[in-house]
Image 1 (cartoon, helix red, strand yellow):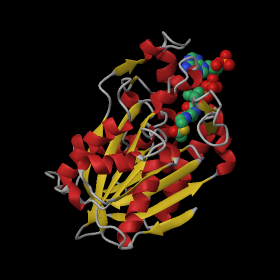
Image 2 (cartoon, protein in one colour; image 1 turned 45 degrees about the horizontal axis):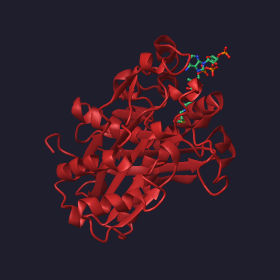
Image 3 (tube, rainbow, N blue to C red; image 1 turned 180 degrees about the vertical axis):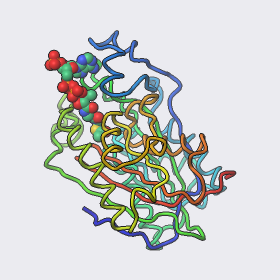
Image 4 (spheres, rainbow, N blue to C red; image 1 turned 30 degrees about the vertical axis):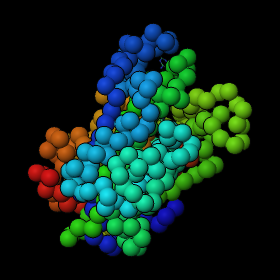
Length: 332
Ligand code: ACO
């Protein structure tokens, strides 16, 4: 694990944008494909509906509008962006990277651009990387995108995975600010548990493997997720000399309401401090935390000066937290 690094530089999020596909797919619609029901899905996951990309929509089609909104909110000229990181497991294609495509599309000429693979934790890893690059003086203005079009990896005959996921993306701008934004990060991985969540035909190991659909041992992932959500939050708070009471807003990865409820109870967060969007979007992988930030900003729960704890977990198996003070004015 990257030991709960306590951030020292004054770097923060200065712009945020999100985008989900227009197409809403309800639980009832899914029951046309597999033997399931709205009642089962709501009870076991809290999901009511999710967004599904059209055949023509690739990740960059979601990430680009999110990126443009984030830049506009930050008041940043795309030409001044010198680093673009896209956290995803569903890039438009393996190469060129979706980050390079986005940098080109927005006119961030010569920006360093790459995709990052850390499953649903990707956005947290990408935030930490961008923070480190800015703090180290290697870059000055970073664009961090988290997003996935997981519907491309659905097995439409497998009820154990089909009902859980959805599509969506979010983007943030990271810059130096007068006050301290990010307070710390905590990242880790357990490759030994990787076999609990995997994509058989997806790389050089089994390149000819025809099965290109998500496989998951739900119970193992459930156990892992409930454990690391709690552990990672406790670790980062301890390293930053803070407690649960100091946190104004908690944005956990949106995999399943039962997982979130478990972590929330163990950690002792009152429900009004917890952001939930899995009911409307399903598990959007790297998109879930930026989508949560956008919800909290829109409903007024995210205010300047508030302490925000974000924790992701996912394939790898990976986990990661970021603790920050929100530095943007409400009017931004
Ligand atoms: N509809 C109806 N029945 C179903 C469905 C479905 N969609 N899926 C499974 N079932 C059945 C099973 O076949 C089983 O039937 P049986 O008792 O006759 O054998 C029964 O429901 C119970 O199955 P379980 O797998 O024990 O159900 P569980 O309560 O564990 O819930 C779930 C399954 C929702 C997948 C849960 O394990 C879970 O949320 N795991 C975490 C997985 C996750 O969130 N992954 C996301 C990716 S990773 C990440 O983001 C961290």
